[in-house]
Length: 270
Image (cartoon, rainbow, N blue to C red):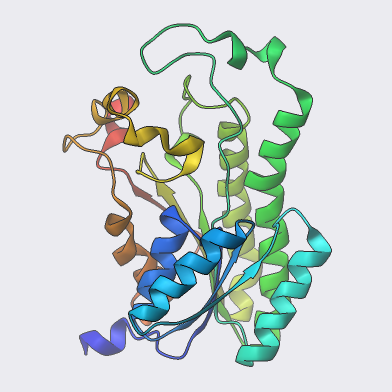
């Protein structure tokens, strides 16, 4: 019974931004449970390393060097996966970036580099392009393949930053993630009739490579640990169970959900 509930064996899965961090965790758990996984990432060396390491554990995984901001390239990559796997069942729209420093430092000082009048326009544009527009493009391509096959699962990585304002995070990040949440709910409304479930995962602070991996630094990490109700920030292993739930039959009645996984940080901050 339990095995059937979480059975994703044979699923065709795409993970954008899957070479490291949370995206890698998605790829690892799905491959470990018997899915056929393709990682999309701009980091070719990182993708090759991750693919090699997951393969060494017996996972069915491969990778493509993809810039999610390159719409023709992204569409072609989806087509390549569909041709190789015969279908696309689950897509994790995970790729994201830290668009630059916030207007405060983790230790509470003003940061002039993050002040609104000093933000380069191209920095704002890139933050919106990767954190919001690429989600639109990823979902669009997923649906193009899922509709003819009668359904599928789309899981978008948002953030608790969509629900609050973070002074130490780049200014474009919060509005981009807030828009992602609305987009997820809107897509759930549109696509439910086609058997396509659309949900979002809202992580709190996790130790990943985003922002140059700054949460590995004790001083930067302390500010986020202080927000947690359980005294620590997330490890990517913490997110694997939720990722599997949303892709599996166990999550079959979930769509349009914004699922927070943050050690209680959002409760404390609000």
